[in-house]
Amino acid sequence: MSQDNMIKLECTECKRINYYSHKNKKTLKERMSIKKHCKHCNKHTLHKETK
Image (cartoon, rainbow, N blue to C red):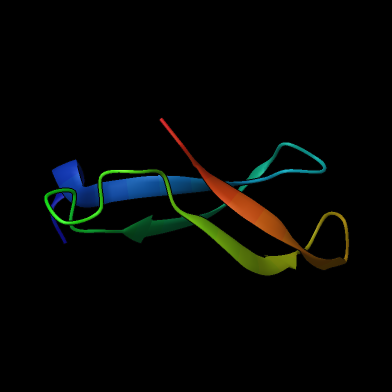
């Protein structure tokens, strides 16, 4: 996995970075947002891509 395609996913409620993923930046121009489980909030929350 190359570093230039890596993204960080941050919880919208507690503002902690919980997940790292990758995406194709040529085809997906806007920021990703995925519902994932946050271990700090202990529930499923929306995780948005950060810089």
